[in-house]
Length: 618
Image 1 (cartoon, rainbow, N blue to C red):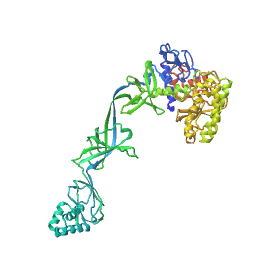
Image 2: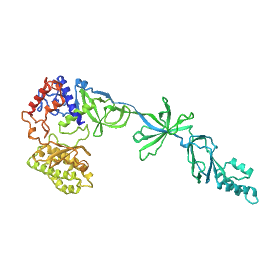
Image 3: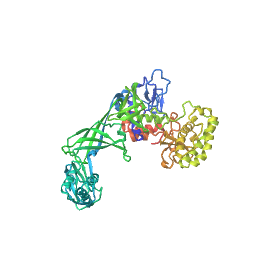
Image 4: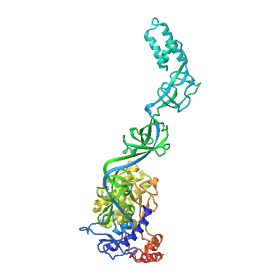
């Protein structure tokens, strides 16, 4: 976002200047196109930095003359909205549609898959099916095994048959017969043995079902033991298309939904079938659930283990919908710009549910009938960033709770209160140094002095108890670990920096103010330091140099030399070099954009004019 700010500034400068004429008669607030924080209620006022004429910023509302402007509001005239290409769409209720594309594999039906294992130890005498992919029928012999154990079992049965009932009971003969069945003989083979009474060591391994040989694990002459795997057979007349569903997509998938399947081997053909089953057990590694579709394959067009791409069209019942193009991400939170009356656009944080193809489900923050910006929202967000940066805030919060900051009407500190604030600032700087060094014991050692300074400040300056530090009157956490301490210290330090900057303590007492835009609690955390070295207390060694210094004292060469009045700048704001900006960004078009001090100038003339207004040397 920060890389877009110069471009956004330039574009809005041109638009605001060209579209401001119609608003002069009715505007309540005027601002500088180049420096939006310079504002006035006088239509003929000039920017105190660059000297440009202020332009209309917002139209007044009845009864609202004394109300503060919404800091998240960006106002455009119809002409400006047209030039920037801002488009809006209505928030409506309707079904949310999502198209999921999944990759999967054609597999055989697990309920019709068999593994053949050796029932007797022996030697593979002959393979009747000696390749994978062969089609077999139920009962067809696949291999013949020579097994002495089978020979012994047949002899035992024949002896008991010959001896008759006088030597062996009926149950003993039945037991011997049952043993033959267990070793793999069929009823037909046993009847033949009962007729011939000729035992043999050969036993056939037969297919238990009709299907296709999926794997073969033996060769002729190979010795096998009981339970050794010999063959696998699958029924390919019916196949499964199996695909993985990621956790976020499980909300869209349910049994019965139609799946459209495209296979590389069936160019131009689309197979359709419903989802038959979704496995409730997620894969711990991939965090996916497996789903399957049952496909008819009587024509044998589908090949085992080939890949395919499927499309699942999911649709929810009626929900509140917002176009996906309207949603921006700000600090990881979804934000939209809502079109209000009189061409105003207000940033609003929302809560989203599921995301569809072109719309997203809105759970909170919008209502049916609201109009949101679908094109040009990024430009509006950049302008809102600029306006907030001008107010001393590093980023706008889009309606979310903001960190505590100094109120506009905060009473000024007298000498005694200033001394208490100064002592608190130095104690906080020492605590921040300890946290930056990942030194929890050092922080805990500094904590009593920090607590004492805080209590002294809150007790000695009564408005402070109602201010941003009032919430810390019960003290700061001292543990149990660095992470907990840092999360507790960050809002305190950021609130304290606001007071320090308001009273210019850091300039008067040689303290340094730093800011990190990635802090875990506030997103933008600030801290104080006794020296100018950047050391981040909110991350320590993990991101020690994350951040930048705020309100650094300008060098003598940077000091303004002429008439620029910087009284309207935020506390400690550095001088602005408009000339360098114009030379870098402009070309002749910028200087000719409107009725400011640079109207009609070339780029070089605009640079010279800007240098003169700021007192800087070209």
